[in-house]
Image (tube, rainbow, N blue to C red):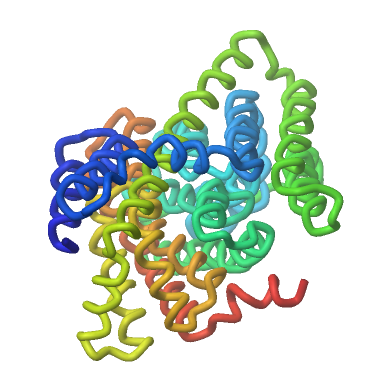
Length: 426
């Protein structure tokens, strides 16, 4: 059954069928071919259970928050401010790309939205100042991946919901690894541009008066992040409530920025509906697939298979890491998570691994799926914003940042406290 389900999953995805539909079709197939009981009769109850949760209300709120920030014209001013603070480093504006992606990751919760926002603002600057298109584009694609790691993260909410893990603990656990990866991205950029100056553009210096004057454009994003995260850990609000407050503050920021209009609100709401509907279809399909897999005994089969390999818990962990790296080449991020969480997480928890720690490790692994061909979404988003050159240039530019992600995976395995220090401290 294991190999049949795996082959069916890859086969259906290769036909470009929507992921949510694929998960339901797999559930129907398991019911027909591997179960002695009519599992389809539980479809209605399972789908209702998957969507009847107050926790999931946070998803449309965080999506709407990101849409408002993206469409409210806030990105341009944030980017210009970080340009003044970071362009003196080797690599120049590339550091502003990473810095802007990090700040928007701390508010939008979506990697694709973050990459699209930064790419739209930054690409005209790259062409005007003569930056190497490969590294410049790769930095934007890689920086965008931080959107699913730095809280608030939609993917962490989905992981917490599917595994019954504390979302506030997951948010805290993702903060330090996310900031370390952003710093590592900038360090790698500086080293590469120091060794090969042609990769970066001109380093530019601004007066301290200009730098401090630009902070007014960074302050709203910092306040928004502090309110969202601070209200959760102060015990004043749940993640759902803090997301609603964040939407209200984002609207005020966009209003003060002059970016609110009927057209902007219409596009923000339509974008929220589209993204939320896609996510909820995937979650409902994952719940039904999980129900059929458990009922048909696939979990026991997989546990027996891994047990018969004779690996230690650490060896099993390495197998799972390799599995995610390979699957990340072919399956989109959220799809990869929801298709594997019901199978992999119980096994890893049974081996004694902390579910919060493993969630962060999984997020870093699936982040690579966003910038590795042939399915990496951020690659196509950035290439679409470039409107010139080839997709291969963007792929080549992400290679140094994929190496950073692999280094973070190794660091999390060797030093779990990177992820667990903050949640254990609070």
